Each structure stands twice: as structure tokens, then as C-alpha cells.
Image 1 (tube, helix red, strand yellow):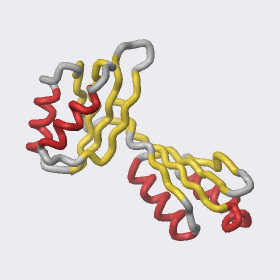
Image 2: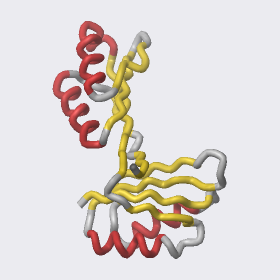
Image 3: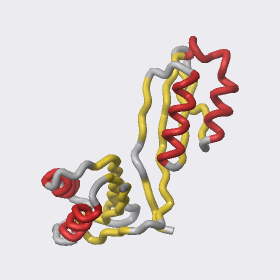
Length: 157
């Protein structure tokens, strides 16, 4: 079962390591992790996505509240979630198909972000399952060189 939590922590050294170690100590895998400072504050937001047993996850959430740098843990099923992916293609192989690539990207809230003499980079921003679908569609048709995914960012509705 997919679980997402948003953890507000004091922006200090070692906070990320303590939280990740808590997951690792219980054998719980983190499938996506994003961390960024909250503007105009001394806090950062960690967005953690994981798959696994709900009971273990419940224990982890309870223990998160006991950690010193943790200010707040937001558990909700009502998040807006987005992820970004960037895909790099060799320009030689796709230059005749730029319009097709752009059309596919636009279906997933994306666009061609950069073109130089060697590569083209496409970026998309959408829900993680739609990013998966985009990658399947684009990989089935074109030979990509590199894929980078940002990890999930969420905000409560």
C-alpha cells in the first residue's frame, strides 16, 4: 500500500539522516524522498513516499513525533501530489520527431526544455503514475539516454 507523509523538521544538520535511519532500522523502504527548506522559516519539509505494511508505517509515524528535529507530521489521503521527470535524447535520433515528442510531453504537462547540438531534454510535471505512463510511452518509441526523476512533492488540499 502506497503511503505518503509530509514531515516538517527544523532545518538543521543530521535531521534527514535521523529520519531515514528510523525507516531503515525497521526495514521499511522509502520509494521517494524530497526535502526543501520552507521559505522565510527555520523549517524544511520532507515528503516521504513508501510502500509497505500499514502497521509498521503507523509505528514509524508515532516515533517520528518523538524525534527532536520533527515539528509536525502530516498524514493525509487528500494530498495533491506532483513529480517532475526530465528525459534526455540524442538529437540525431529524434530531430525528425521533435513535434511528436513535444505533443507527447504536452499530454503529461510537459514540454521540450532544452535543445543543443547533441541532445534534447524534455521535462514533464504530473502525478507519479502519469510520469510512469509518460516514460513507458516515450521509451517505447524513442531511444533515451538518461532519465532523472525528482521524487514526489505534496501539499494537503
